[in-house]
Image 1 (tube, rainbow, N blue to C red):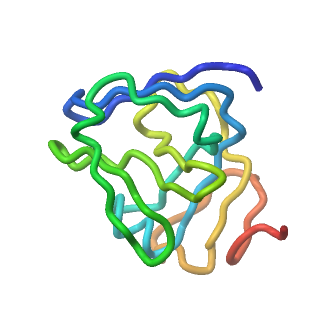
Image 2 (spheres, rainbow, N blue to C red):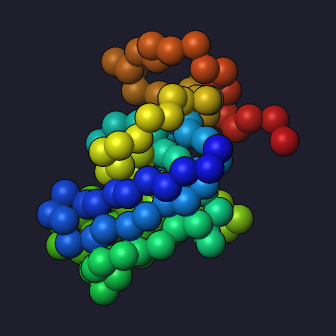
Length: 129
């Protein structure tokens, strides 16, 4: 899938570009719920394919027990999780996104009111390696 997606935080202070996204999934873990207020739909991308175009000085890092999370220090928008070999970039910040979820992970921990409305594979915890 060769394409480029542009994204921006709520205040517009941080703008970025994602090249060659590898797919999109939804994480339902309690950490993502606390970080975003809901489950987190994210686009997987290699770190080399993620570029801040504007506002790098606004990007701050929060160290969590799972993965470092980057956010805009001005408006608080969740930008991405640094998973090491991949970034999990918040999909809601990319207005022209035309991908569909390919998986749901941590489904055992989803909020009781949340209903999954697509037929993407669901994993109680993480997908098999």
